[in-house]
Image 1 (cartoon, rainbow, N blue to C red):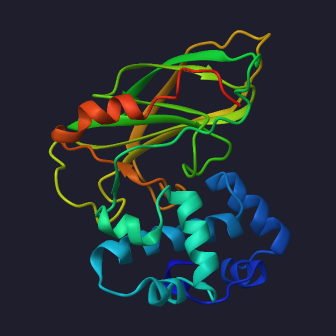
Image 2 (cartoon, helix red, strand yellow):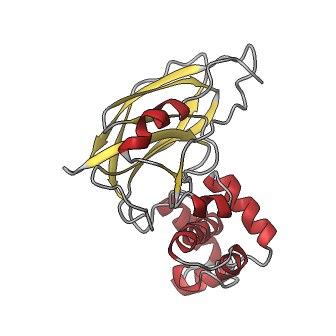
Length: 248
């Protein structure tokens, strides 16, 4: 996929490269990565687009074609919904975002909401710094989370006002020393747990999630990284939370 990012790849092409039948390949790929081959390919195309927007001066149209989109409009729409910022804004922000919007679906007046607690741990000793924790509908951290928070370092977390549904608890972190422009996911540590069924009549047990360096088989972090530089953190720790007022 990475070597042919701009080509029209089908499931048949991928299965043939792996010397599997199409159905066996799709099953094994989903088992190993948590997402379908087609969804994974779409994610790494957007991940590559993020890198090109920061590292190059290619236009948005040129980048959309380089990562396999025939329509710049379709590319821009998918990039914006997944990353949380348009390609142009993402470039202007140098890969960071000042805020993460929470999905308010299922939070209407009278909706029964839950509280989710747990702890983020690091699998190896290191200089992990601020940690973003969120609940998402799939194994790919993209779009608007159902709930999220920002921690100054791995440790206890609390997600409140969580709507009913099936969610994946996803987290990512960057090193304490990281204060420059991020040009890829190489420095990111990630962790995931799920699927988790959230229902108002069933108590949620505390969950432990371990962070580790991101690997080739991990779906990329598509959500734009929060600005982890110290000058921005005080504001970020507030805006990454869900609004308190009940609203549809």
